Image (cartoon, rainbow, N blue to C red; front, side, top):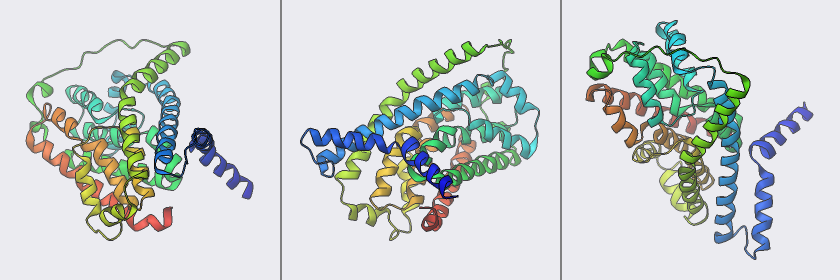
Length: 337
């Protein structure tokens, strides 16, 4: 048992967490005459460590996920979802969302395509919620920073929100709240090309390059903000605003995340810095969920496909779910980390 724990700790710290990289960057900063524990040296260490770690993990994750995803093109995904009904269909849609490494704005066109193909509205909304909020990439990155318990519970609760949201929307019979051009649209049945292993690897590599180009600016901005928070903002400020003394911190973090636009790879460095400064775990995770699921640009895009009533219900379901998740994590924080 001790050997198993030692092996897991090594995997957690040195493979996922890349602590070796932090030590290497720390020595390089020292060689330049800076103190890695000081504000300037610490900011440099934080920035280069998180950027390199996230981009390396991102490259590996996107390659693996995209290779798997090559077996599930949109037409095949529609056929799979069409075989299920009711709660089972919502669960399958939420799970399929976990293997799509998309931000919310990238998920919306797929949502529109699925809806046009005639899939039930609850199924498409379960996919729309889970795709940006929960994916395999977020699971691995969360494990590298917060540990496997936090990562696993985050993913499970995200899936619960997706399934519950889709089920509720299905029960409300809001099909008339989808814009007319979506409801009258019909997906074109395209022949499925059989890909060989080499084709799938080439596809996966193209996805890595494409995703890295899109994500890199948000990672750089997110890590930059995280470095400032981690090394320049007094800990007392964070504790006072987002610590246990503020019962409304989860709600505040959820609202603060809405105007931003990024995916989980850009928000994790900010969450990591906030947590290190004394913010509650539920607060930082609610912030991450709000940014990835309810960002203002994605809501503007979604408004093109659905009417205000359905958009409002979607936002309300996600916001209530995110706030509840935040308070659950706050209550469990002492047990998780």
